[in-house]
Image (spheres, rainbow, N blue to C red):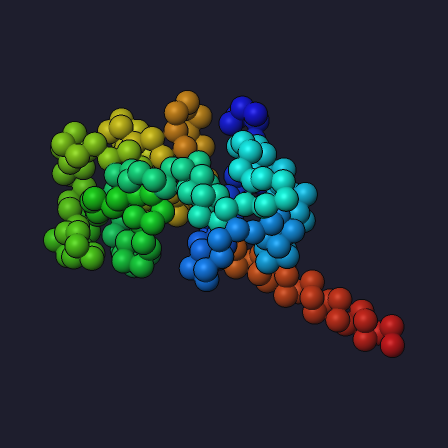
Length: 220
């Protein structure tokens, strides 16, 4: 199956498979069937088999999946067996939290630089990185050739910043701004992260649950 024909829903399940398989491996599992994996993940065994079949034949009938091998294959599909150089744009509270608390190496990235325009932030440390002035961005990119960028800049600056970064050779964006980034350019990957949307989705789940409970009470 062509990678372009694989649905986004399948792709978004891959990190979850990778995480679950890592937990199983840590707990001493050697092999697991699609049925057992489905019970642990809340998916159907058929769905799991269909997802894996998008990328090849990983299991053996009557044996199941080798946990370590399957995790390695999924890690390879996700690109986690290499480190992609990444930079951070915007080292304020959100950018600092992201840079300080995410294990980038286990996610396939190497955070090599952080930039900001605020003189009070430039020169400060984030982990092992010293925040650089944004004016140094182009020369830094020429020398270090980052491929991915984290955007934590004001929404008003996001579009212009994205254009500058693409000109510097950036091909992937982890976008935390409120600007829904759609570059419209071939060869550019974008992951828009809206934390507020996630919170309102939680609000919907809570509201739906409370509504169902109220309706059940009224029927009694």
